[in-house]
Image (cartoon, rainbow, N blue to C red; front, side, top):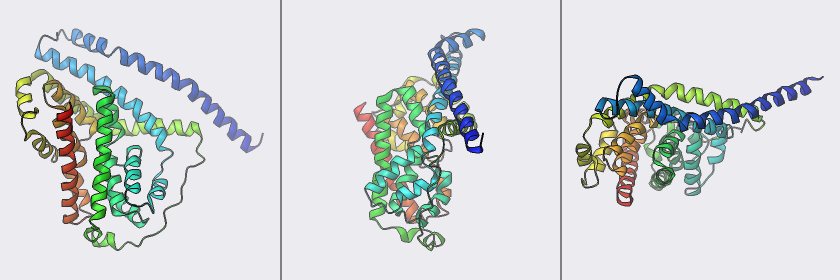
Length: 351
C-alpha cells in the first residue's frame, strides 16, 4: 500500500466515524433540549424551592437558561465552524478586493456573519484589508457586521425569541452595517486614518488557501471552533444568566416597564448610552435581554441596548483609536448609533 492510498483510507475512516457520530450527537442534543423544563423543575425541587417564591423563580430561570444557552451555542457554533472552513482570512480579503461600493458593502456584511472576527481584530483587519486594496467603506461594513450580526447572537435570539425576531435582527443588523459602510465610503474619510495606516501601499490580496480540505477535517474544525468559542465566552454566559435570573426573580415588572417601555421616548437612546461603557458579548448580554423583556421592557429598547454593547463598546473604540483618527471614530459612532436607534424604534413600533 503506497502513501497516498494509506492517506485516503485514514481519511475515509475518519469521515465514517463523523457520519455515525454526528447523528447520534444531534439526537442527544434534541433529547436534552426537550427536557430542559424537567431539569429546571428537578433542580429547584432538589434545593427545596418552589416557583412561588422570588428565589425559587430566579433559580428556575438560571437552571433552565444555562443548559439552554449552552446547547444553542454549541449547536449553531459547530455549524458555523464548519462553514468557516470555506472562508479563510486570505479568501475573505480576496473576495472583497476590488469590489465597488454597494456590492462590496453587501458582500462584506454577509461575510462578517460567517467569519470568526470580532472588534479586538480591528487593527490587523484594517491593515490587511486596506493593504489588499479593500475600500475603507467596505472594510467598515465588514467590521460592523462581524461583531454585531454574529452566530452567537443569531443562535440565542432564534432559540429564545423565535425565528421572526432573529430574522428581523439579521436584516436590520445587516442594513446598519451596509448603510454605515456606504456613508463612510461616500464621505471619503481616508485622510482620517492614522498616518502609519494611510502610508501602507496597496498590494495584491493574499493567495486563497484551504481549497482541498477534506470533510472530516472540516468536521474537526467545527468541533475545535466550539471548544474555542465556548471556552472563551462561558464566563460571560454564566454571569449574564445570573444577572438575568436576578432581574427575573427580584425586579418588579412595573418598574422595568416604566424605564424601558415603549411609552418613554428616551428609553431607546438611554439604552444605547447605557450599553456603550459595558464590556461583554452576545453570549453574556442576551440572557439579560431575555430577562428584561420578561419583566416588561420593550423589545426594541432591549435590542438597542444589546447592539450598542456589542457594536459600540468602549473597549472597541480604544482599539480602533490605534488605526483611526478622532473624526473618523466620531463618524463611525454617530452613524452606527443612529442605525441602532432606528432599529430600536422600529422594533418598538412593529412589535
